[in-house]
Length: 274
Image (cartoon, rainbow, N blue to C red; front, side):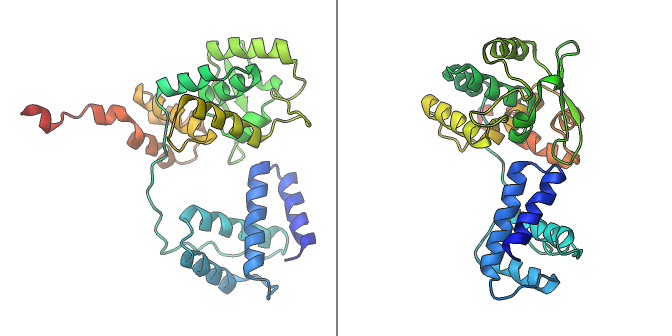
């Protein structure tokens, strides 16, 4: 695994329309593997099993190990022309952790604390539509249908198009934003390139959370989790939430029923019977 091969891997992923964040993450996974495996140049089944054991010894998370293996398998197939079996995660238990989410009131506080119009529009869009950060960055003006009140998310995760609802309140905000900033192709233009950067969005949210005194472990992706949880709490069918979020498997959507406080609030606490 040399620098030329890593560059080729990035180019292939770019051609295949992988998001910049995925390409960057996979590239970092390969670099870590290269550091561990610097004495040997080959990549095979035995080597991957050894690497999994190495990662487990350092108590790496299930998702980290999974992403590392996915990156190495894809690299082997696309660059080396060798397909490897996907059975390296057997016996590794995935920790069941629930993501932190904001309440509706906390979301309102966060949005109210953002004074910059573009920043407010970005965070509002991500929450209101349950978008991944890459989907927000890649969104084009032509994909917003104000007549049907829909937004088309093109080639989201899983390479699948989907439609999400366009809130009238969000449309009003986006129109004000459009008149002031006059974007060309992408809805949110960056300072030095056509697309806005993921890091800039993360920093916007981080500052807003600090301003509001929110101490939960919240990321931009938490807005998507919060949106889905609030839909479930309002009684939206899980299948509809699955479609809105673009989940392939209903089990991925199922997690929001565990986060939802509505299910817990329906329970009569025996302590209150005394």
